[in-house]
Image: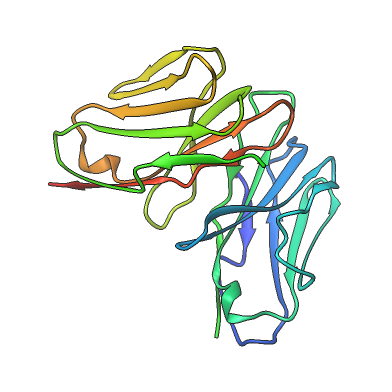
Length: 114
Length: 110
């Protein structure tokens, strides 16, 4: 199994630009999570989906952030417009609900907004 | 709301010394999981504890779940440089998603 796949692995952009992060969960997993990690705030849950449906988006910082899961094998996290304070590592994780509930994390996208 | 706190935030140990990190939840948990994140890496699942008072071991790592299912600990015996990283606990209540702790960053001095 390839594990959770995220792209791009690194992104450098200028303030005001749109940023799209992509995630392919592990095949067969029915829950998907987006996290943000910074030194100051640690690991924060942004949003999670169950069976492609957003369940809890209370962690999404503001309207500049949006997430979609059009099908079971693909999700995007979009930031528009981006700001320097959005600089962080963004992780996608997936799990099979009903099993051990273990979350499998992708390698992350390191985002730097200048 | 749900909160999971970990102490200490940082720990520096000499190689061969023991290390312990503690995790406390504001609410009773259905289970608790532990993850390790190497520098520059991503969190990787280590173990899950479900039963009150449960103790599990993985080689030099010992995991405990409190009797009240509100706290947990991870103890590493005789640390090695390969143990370097940040250790996170993550608590779950019912069918809800995991609430990750603040993490303990372990540095092992050779």
